[in-house]
Image (cartoon, one colour):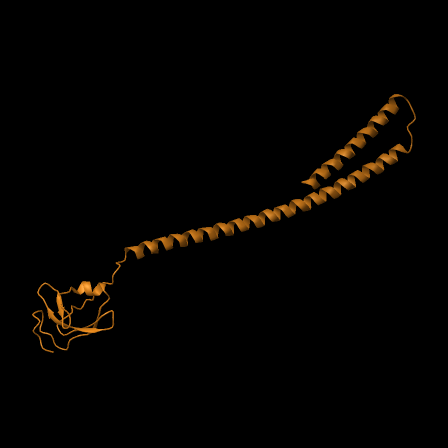
Length: 179
């Protein structure tokens, strides 16, 4: 911007000098006076100097403008890359949100095993003890050898109990099978 201003200033100075020379020549002509012979060569030298200076300033202004153009182009490329990275980030955030939503939809407890526990099956407890199923009741609950009470398989799954070993032979749900 400053270089462009200097170029305009140099051109304005040249125009002003030429107007002074023209006015002086017109005054001398109208008054029928002799014109000093050194004025024209001096004005011509000043005009040449101003023209060269204006040319130099103009070339500098072009260089600055080209540098600015390159800088703006680089800025535009950087902005495009930033927009692309931002879009990719937003897409990843959406994927994370979708996955988080799906994780929230998963059941908190593991799904019960497909195999229905039978009389004689051995169950691994969370405290590392192996229990044996003594009886399977008609309502689907089970009783264990060394424990009092009746349990559902789902309840034991929730506590983290797992099937340790299947019974070698089971007669069904009456609890009277032999192994």
